[in-house]
Length: 94
Image (cartoon, rainbow, N blue to C red; front, side, top):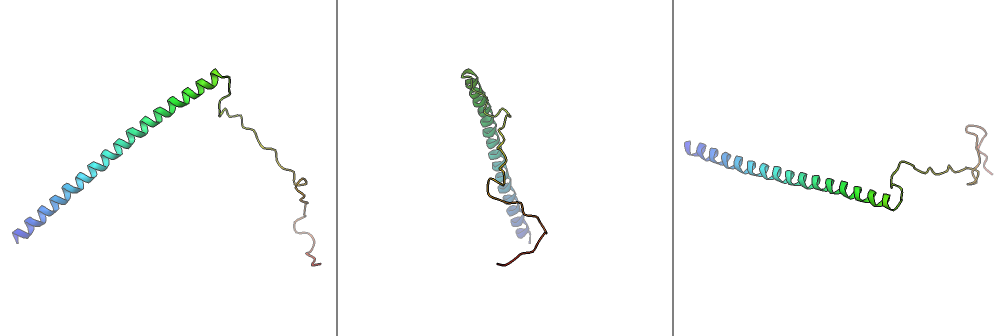
């Protein structure tokens, strides 16, 4: 009986160590990914700053300067649509 308990305890301990190793590996991977993302964000900021600097040097406007051009609304008459009163009249089958 003690032998079975000892085996179960050893098996449990081995599983615990394996699980702990997997958790540690996952945490290390997440930390590496975080550092990569942080570096990419810094690189993006640097590139945007360079682009804006070049645009200013060339007299170009900023790509997104909040001056959006709104598209004109289309006139239904131009599309050949008529105003049809809703709920009036009957459908006539010709």
